[in-house]
Length: 257
Ligand SMILES: C[S@@+](CC[C@H](N)C(=O)[O-])C[C@H]1O[C@@H](n2cnc3c(N)ncnc32)[C@H](O)[C@@H]1O
Image (cartoon, rainbow, N blue to C red; front, side):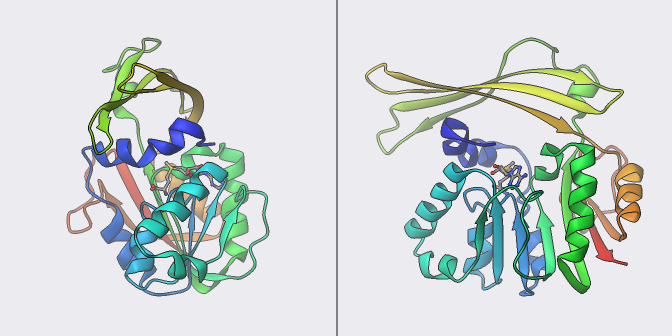
């Protein structure tokens, strides 16, 4: 669950990542159909989609993230649009959705925060939460640097740093340490977030998460086993290129069978 400083610094650090924005893919996918984003966080993707007129609901497990979503909507004059959407503050694996959707997306690697068992359960559930011809969008990553041993397992390293505030006098840092299980395809990460204010006062927040990764043939089989037919693979968020064999980001679009 993203809480406290991990929630507050999520968008700052995410926007620093040297990856192409996922937004154009989501615009094409949601295509003004009735939609849901799972793990909508602070609205980094959901708010621009709402702004462009895509009717989209969200599910977010972290109340801190939902507070940021409301604040960001207010800052962007999108509160009335957000009020027309249903935002579930809940664990997607545990709630009953109030309606069916034509499009459901799970962007930004959120599906990897679930265990394999929970992902299977979720994919079955989403099957009943989509309309006939409904479509599903999932973006996953493969942690090649950790798999290949390019990062040292068990050592703290600086994952992100940023300078914040209008006065540029607050510094934010995230240190990370991981262990990897290549057999089970899990990456266990510990994070230490610090915010250092101008007066030297520090705020600290620790978190940990276990990420499950999937190869493309494997996720295709999992989708087929849960009655989803893989229609399209996009790698590294580049829809106009052939899928790259060394890709580390996989976006899969599947339709209901
Ligand atoms: C990597 S962040 C992505 C947030 C947002 N989609 C974005 O791209 O900025 C993953 C989000 O999924 C949420 N999340 C994780 N597990 C969840 C669950 N079981 N149900 C609902 N939300 C969940 C987290 O709290 C977090 O906000």
